[in-house]
Image (cartoon, rainbow over all chains, first blue to last red; front, side, top):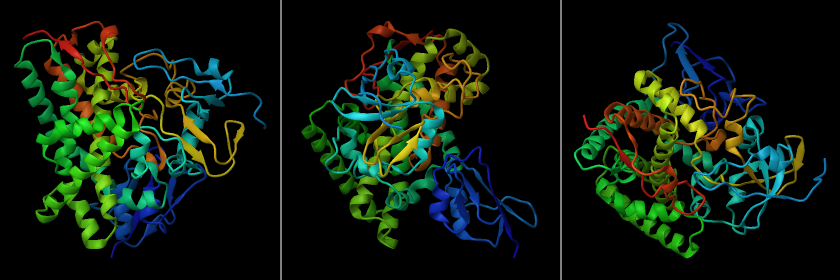
Length: 74
Length: 399
């Protein structure tokens, strides 16, 4: 199964911490409360998908590491 | 650093009146103590970085600010049971349940329906005699209809729940007994509606929340009721008056109106600038420090009430050049009008879509749109929570 690449656009992040709440093992806040991934490449994980889908500013990008295509968030 | 002086008198400007120059009041201190008209002594935080730091730092607690024993006015009594008055992890557990319904992606899918409601409302106004009251005919029914459809509330009940919402958040000087009565009635209304939906679920947000309660026990019955009320109340008075205040600001700047009419592609950008420049509320919700916190060069002790001055953030010259100039072509998207951090406005993306479609409709279909009375004669409802216009009489050129 293909792996996923997670990235967070810190310029879009509004520090809602929703991702950390939904997937606490996958996201971490920096000293300015902005989110970033714990690991940039992971096995597919429904919690991460939920976190990306629930980010109010859509700052989380999730792509298939093999194809580079965005992961379907629905 | 010690607190070197007694609190300065701090009176929030009335709606439609100029905002006092904070630097003058505070003697140039970005974080200072103020005495409010109700006698409360609070810390006031100004400037973009300080305000932003404060509202994302969870040591500034909303739960403590609405806890029993704190002076609570109007909206705060309602906030006490809602996500607005909670801290993580309680806040997170509840907000997670609704967050995905309000993302930009999900809200974008509602845009055609929002545009359709805009079109219907403008059509209905145009079919009647002028002047028209934009509040009753457009700015209030638009967001009310949208949030009703999202939640699954019968739009026919709009008048009733608007009266409750008006009592609860419209006027902080109102007798607290009246506010509690309105709250009890609103909770009763939703309690009954939840039972109806429970028996006959539909494809709406209220049914989804009921399923989250009944299928996986992710929230209590009380939390379910309060969440529905929060979404309904949060979803319409705010947007309605953001439309009103935005239009007032625009009409005061005919050159900017001409720019927008010439290039409707600027509307999303103009909406951000309107959000930056208008002042929708009076005094923002208070937070209380959970421990001593350093901010803006001072230490605020634990247990103190603190209020962020969003207007000073949105007009901070280090972030927005020539900040007092209203410019619809400016990139103003980093304004803090929706807040930031865990309490960032849940409905921000929905409000953006509603505002964009509202102004696309008003600019596109009502040429020569203008006030029917001098701006100085417009009346705001009393209170400090939301700057809420009673009426907004407008005229436009008949095609």
